[in-house]
Image (cartoon, rainbow, N blue to C red; front, side, top):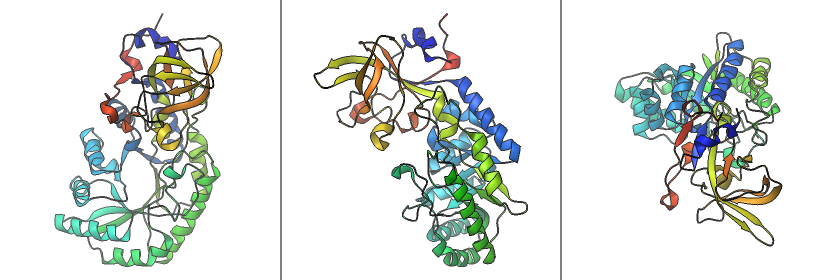
Length: 388
């Protein structure tokens, strides 16, 4: 679906706003489910990627569970109709209040990330008079070859329990009468496009499963987290992530024990490509060394370029004139408020529409009101007329 088809409708709306292609979202969910069903895998959608209520409910209706990283996300998942037994709760710094939310709602499992957390969850479970299902998050010490801010599976990262802690972990589990270990969990990072990383993860988990089995620890479930990347450079040419290749790697390389089920926590590959930030050109500044397109969307609306130095494809929707090189910048009083430098775009004019593509993951959900700016609303393709 071409964004240009919606230009007459866009012209009636205040910018910036997030535009969601619902047809593409439906196609993406179907592609993911098809490949998971091939192997009997399960998925819990990572709410942190995008918590837009309409999008979340579509994912719920498609049969995805929920992966939460805060107590409020657990409550949000329950509120929006996810079955508690399809909700997993991760996070390296859960408060007592947040853990109590998870215990009260009898979710599928709490992913514990430290030995001390095991003790806290056990104590709170005992106070509630319950035996609570948990997962142990393992730190596999694997380099995911992605941005350092979204790397989570190295020894130097704060996430998970390392192999050298296993003896202490087993001791604490044996002493914890209000915990039931049902799963092992691993997640090495986000936006991973180097597929051999997932092969290494499988081999490492095979090794760690054996180490734990030798200590008498076996589980019913494995959870391999998420991490599958999407194509930010050519979203039109690659609108759906490589779910087939991704799940095939785990089928081929991960050694499931008899009766074990395999779970995943996809976020970005489900929602990233279905949304664009639509913004309007305020000014064109032509200089001796640089030309600037100043748009009304900024880092408060799409933080990834400022936070991760991320590159989003930038599309000019209103013009097909000769291309020129521009720095595309926003109105925020920060030099980091830049979406791209030396970007070739058709010659721009005041009022033109610009689309920042692949903005469905970590876009709207990370918006903020710095400079007291309004939050951008969401607009959906199935609620707008197409141009004739």
